[in-house]
Image (tube, rainbow, N blue to C red):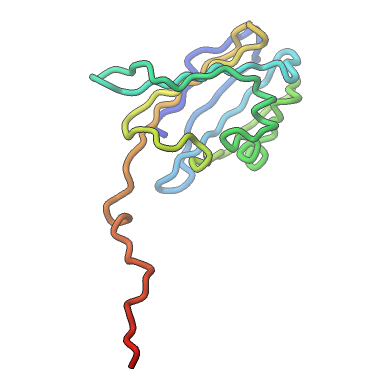
Length: 166
């Protein structure tokens, strides 16, 4: 992940909303942030997810898009979101309440739960959050999918050398 930003949010839904990336260690970045709802959305938050791929020096439509209820996906642990939120946050998307400070502290996405075989390159992930059909917030994540270093591909074989019958 290179950049995480919240370019806009509905101030009639949130008292405040802050999200960003922090360094977890020398090589890994993590998501941190906080927010406070002004009303009780409970489990009525819908996510609209759209992925764009960098091609010809601009982000173009990529055929990975979906719309889902946040609580339903949390219960199914889609993309490992339940595991990640339970480890690093006090947020329960099935019971969101107003007047309560929600925090996310150094949440590291589990890339093993993401779709396999995405082409290498730079991407922009746009997630829009809706309360029924009313806009709440938008998060933009800029990320890169890179190949493993060459050294990782040249790992020694686990096969034992052939032993003679001497």
